[in-house]
Structures are given as structure tokens and as C-alpha cells.
Length: 66
Image (cartoon, one colour):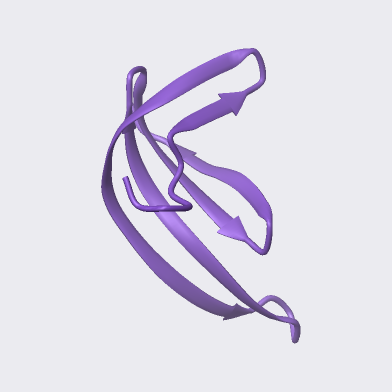
């Protein structure tokens, strides 16, 4: 994988190994009046598909897919 892309997600007591980056994109938003850039990743893990984003140095789990 490319440098800086996630390879493992730790969420609570769960560990999700990233198998594939199925999509990624950059969103620039004005959240609110503080310009924010988020880098989103849709990932296929060993336990399902998730969507996460990075804003600055922080990572956030945005969505779990069934």
C-alpha cells in the first residue's frame, strides 16, 4: 500500500486488518469557518467494509457497511 494509508484499524477491542483500499477521496469543507480537509478511505477489511477519514493527525470511523 501507499505510504500513509491505513493497514490496521483498532476500534474498541477489535482489530481490523485492511485487505484492500477500494476507494479514497479528499473533501474540503468549512467546518465551520475553520477550513478542514478530510481524506476519506473506503476499506475492505478481514471483518467487512468500513469508511474512515483523517483530518490533520486524527482518524475517525465514519461508516460501517453490512
